Length: 498
Ligand code: NAD
Image 1 (cartoon, rainbow, N blue to C red):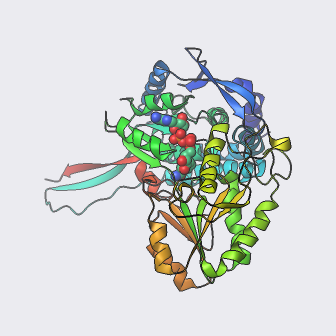
Image 2: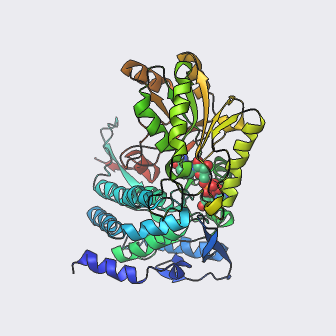
Image 3: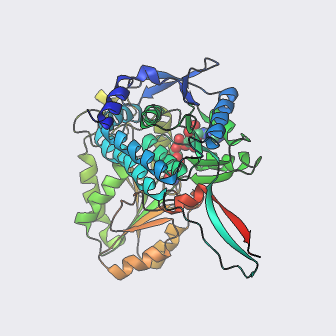
């Protein structure tokens, strides 16, 4: 048995949900000191999976202390860049080794089809750790051309310090990796809090990180809800917060971080537009639009959630889209053949439904869907894939983030007009343009005000590709070389030459 198999086998013995109801602080698994717990629910059935520990102020203090000690320890602070790279690479190998198990756990807790959990979440997490493993030995400084004969200057990228990472419930494992990989590659230590709806794969990842050999205290995991997150944001011992979640909470984080002027990165909401031009190839582009809007039941920050179709192609677009949406296989993420799973919670389902109901009340029509699914799916949080016509730009469904499998379809007649409408949004995360005219595609991509624009495609998430938004979609970028900036400070050192 090689080392990888041995480590994997050891970890699998502990892989039971009952063993995941603790915080991980300073290398120890600790039970909730206060006894306070919250419940993880399976969104496909509404059943309880586990009770998890709710962290209080003393536990956040302990996690921050452990992270601070690790930051300055020889084991982590003194670790060489290539050794950090090897550790991150080993973690990626272990995630691959446990991919099926992680995928099942993610599907159970989050609801996503197990194929997405394996190929997007678990495989994507491993890819992020591998990508940033390579960066550990490439964090170079500069020797700026200072106008001094008696001195020279060099700069270095140094870790920000203790990073508080707060993740959402839509892609718990993958988004934890988006944050952990660059934070650790650059030598920081971490207090990580997963969303209260979906903590299980983060806790399991922590076990795998122990097996990979991360020194104690480098990564600490605390579980809990918004109040636990707020304690982290306001903690004077945390130097930086990286948050992915709603715009409303993002705003409160900016206010809460003011105490010690924490560095703050925010990946917030989006309202991605899909612009279907008069010359779009609908046979190719409609299936891509639908795959995007139904991926993870639409609970994707970059999900297309307002559709501007040239008036000459409107009927064809609606007809083709409705035919695909109506034929999707919907069911529990763990059931064979499921293409779309439930929404993550009843609370979230009610939010999606109220946006759709508001549009229907205001005169929109549901060509397919329009409400929750019943029958054998009634106990879970299943929402019908929905296509709305008769949508007005002023409706909430056309302006607010939906985060569900809903397509509000509108028409346009002129390029200038559609660009103005697309850019008139509080959000600026991403958009897609569909056209067979290369010049039009580039021209529109240049003029769309968003962090990422895609021409004739929807995919865009890759460890090498910077991701983040303009305006209320957030601050900073995750992934790519850009994320290294978010987790480092520049230090300048002067050397006298005379
Ligand atoms: P949320 O903002 O309610 O919660 C996100 C996380 O913040 C959770 O861990 C939660 O416990 C914590 N939290 C809640 N209140 C807090 C507070 N006051 N202080 C500190 N932490 C607090 O968001 P959500 O409902 O979990 O996630 C859905 C939202 O996330 C959507 O709006 C979606 O667009 C956004 N999102 C954005 C991206 C992106 O990359 N831009 C990715 C995924 C999700």
